[in-house]
Length: 141
Image (cartoon, rainbow, N blue to C red; front, top):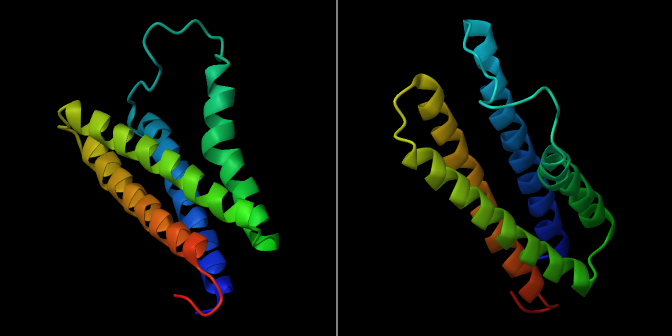
């Protein structure tokens, strides 16, 4: 198997996961069309800096990873792809379990849970592919 297939698969998986994370946010704010108040309790009208970090981690960095994967197959990139993938998988798993733990009873909750399951599966597939790519050597695998 050519090593480039691993890069192509990882790029597609990152893109699909990024779409899933964007949809996750979209699902939250789409409730306003049904008259549901989506404002967080206890907010004061100021956007906290934590949103910068969250958006950087879950929206900007995946775009950077995709660009790196497009242009590099260096060993460091392979190891980084695997390590970062593990962090994202842990994050997605924790978020899914938190959502399930909130005793989902609404259409919105079930929709989010379905999406979070898909994103977690994509993330796990990304880990598997990253592992295969990292372990790949010419003539092996």
